[in-house]
Length: 219
Image (cartoon, rainbow, N blue to C red; front, side, top):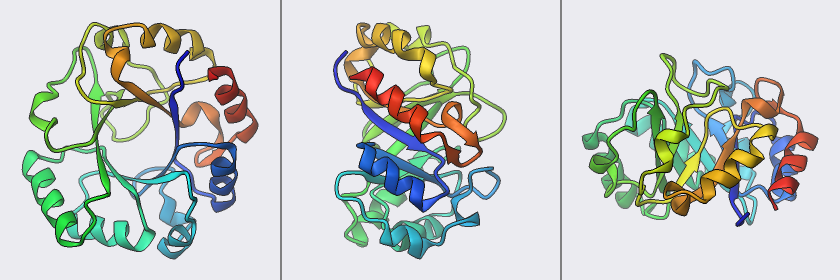
């Protein structure tokens, strides 16, 4: 299996964040959606996040329909490296966000567009020139993780055309399925796995040993 990057999302404890970066995790996701059970500002401050400055791990802020000025305030004051948009943000939203990032000299902050996959593949085309990465997650009436898979068969035959994160209830039993996915047309652009609820002791608190075992199995 070729090396895949790993993103662990929904972190709420700074000591766990430190342990994950020491483990070699590539991306750590912090959720800035107040309705989430993993809302990071319930337990950590922006200043806490600003001072967590790992050299080889990128900090990802997850947002849902957040007003742009609020989002940018968080990006700056938490020192985020990436923005993951998980809501119904319009093309105009992306355009304005890109413009404001440039004004703030934050062009290096990458944008991830989340597509919630239900019974068919979403139309990716309108967003391809506005974002740096895609992320495919399971569709739900609620925003955020469901802990459930979507049908990966919907992805496999497609040429995605942009590197992407695969999310949606990924757990320890998915190693074989991930290997199969890598051999498909869509697998050529598979960049990273986004894991969360299947590796938790409780919402926001991870089973670090389980994560390490999973990462070791991918190598």
